[in-house]
Length: 280
Length: 280
Image (cartoon, rainbow over all chains, first blue to last red):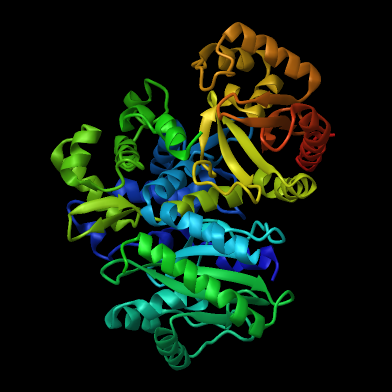
């Protein structure tokens, strides 16, 4: 699948729909509406809309013109938006990368997992990903790409439905029953590829199998032509912290080879990370 | 230099000092103070302080207790902070990575540079970085690490003084005289390493040399034991967009080898990226 197609499909929805929170939060006396609006302004920008004028922001966010102006002015002053004086357009600033950096450095899982991700990469030469659950999606929080696969389409911050990701399925299989049911029950099932599972019943059976076996081996569920192995990472209270995934293009490996070569490496790496996170 | 030492040195200052904006912006009628405060709350978290209580946030930000509560509540509702119900602590959420993702995808330079960064990496096997100028610093916006160097200490979003970075020096050398003088005049000169240049006069001479030669070859200016080659990337109006850097541990290559092997690759890659960005 081309980068463009993936992006098209995962392009963010209208900015207003993007902000995730309890439905009634807006009415809560503690809720500061202007922060949500500022994020809505940031979320208006995308690959398809990298440069936006004040008028475009007003239209995209549904804010009134003077409110949009205040948010644009403030975000520009704070260094989160760039302003192109000649065209009167705004764009996102690289300073947004600093938030990612701050998160990465404050998350113990990412730091402690790093040497074991590298080890798994060195043993196999393949792409190693670390994912965490966010609602019914997984977010990619760390990645060591294979030398053959330094693509733009998948980078840290990438989001996809947990049940269509090998790491995500491994995570969901380790969740307490109620949470697991919630993810299985609320995921939007789609035929992302010809081989993608699109029946909740079939997905439920598969997740039960994963819970028993302790790993996932999947093919072409979201991206066409990959073989992916996923294993969950847990802590000392057996809570699931994330999932590790080893991924290889089907052109380079058979499923049988993946089972023999990737599964043991993924299980060992996830186990080592779990141990450093307090599991025993 | 160990990851810990680098982090120590580059640890973010007190959150309040972090937010970059014009001194008088706060008083401007368009400025929305609550957005700045929300960012101050996010900036309170760091590697040393990954988990913070309401009381700790109050102390770190200087906000009053009820204001801090409103910002914590809102940022949690918006999914940017996680709340640990058992300990009443907050931490940064991986959703912050999505801002980085949005920026990366909306920035044409990063996308168009990517294949040429990969090409330079494949030709040399070494680490290739793409940096952009932010004030007197450079921010790392894209990186292809060498197989030997997948470290936590340097990742996308990493910030360092432009004049101590090979890519940064190449960028500064291409700036209009006034801007160049500003960076040279306001940088805080420090002996980050024994070999680091710490005299503004010497730095000015060096930048003039770079402007003539068109590339930077530096050693151990910020990190101990690296050899780095930097070249600027420009657009059709000869404005500098960023800088490419090829970096290698001194243990693996002599300066003479770096000059022969890395400089031509870096110049070619930067030239190709400049061409795709409209240079001629």
